[in-house]
Length: 446
Image 1 (cartoon, helix red, strand yellow):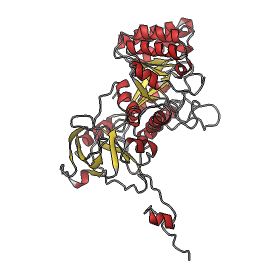
Image 2 (cartoon, helix red, strand yellow):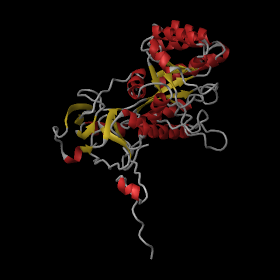
Image 3 (cartoon, one colour):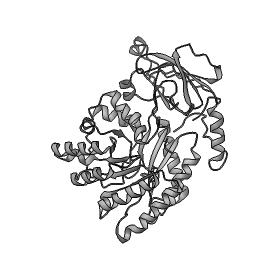
Image 4 (cartoon, helix red, strand yellow):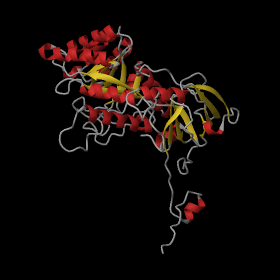
């Protein structure tokens, strides 16, 4: 089995550090000892100056290589043994497949981890910050070194949740890149005036992306007009929730969004799968022509929209039309999905097992496509590219998506999370014959 005998990779605290805007072992968050981002920035800068050698990693083309990281970037890639480095700056990746790290384009840090709570969910800034931080670390442990978190503002919550997520972002600097999307409920009519003012304030506070749910506003077109106007004014990308089951509304969105840069993303668009095939094709062509991206949620809907079925957006149809499709996780153990894992590799697995994509295409949807949707630099395992990497025990992407247990996560040139899985079988003839790892015999008691 590819994951039967994972070896603990050698790692040193000296190994160097890490966008838009659950760890393991003794890994310590940058700036843990101080308040705010100042201490984290100092530690991160120091770590980024350290050289790290990833030794004996397997690439998707079958080569086994050494990869040297420095200054937060890939400095060199050479044949195994050709790039010497000090022993304390070496991570042995024998038995691991080295990949560009995934990114999470659709998270909800303010509501994450609330499914098991008793009574009403607390939205005090301290609670929201704790949840957003823990959720980002869980997703980092899975491999996502950048997270785009949609944050609800307005109603009784005001801007408190946004302030809390931005504080979580600062505290996580050096570990992961967390970006906040401001999600107002209403933007039109008398009731929407406050929402629009609050949305402006959220952008001034540091929300890097403007979002929302046009489907829930009495005037969806007016909502979209307000969002696009504000986004153009501030140069912000737009990321909107929509079920996508109204072809007329999608056509208007495409027509209105075409000229906006840095662009418009919509999701999860599960309703497109319920439209007649010819209507869905026409909608996909319109979205592609306008350059509108789609973020699908293979693991299930999020709580921002009324649940109308668990069908995923028709990824193959959208891709065939030329729509750039990324995959996100959506809900992480909240009302939208009480068992949501927030694992990009599970999203890719579902696209490969149920969505009809090849394993490499499925993984690209949570890595290259997700990073592009988030406005992040491209990552390749080549010299000069950002050192945003994920090592997973296995030798091929298909096997990694099937049994992705042991993972080593690298952000800005530093190992920031590590998960190690060990599987053993009882002492038996078949285990001996197949040379499977066996359970140690228990010592007899006194």
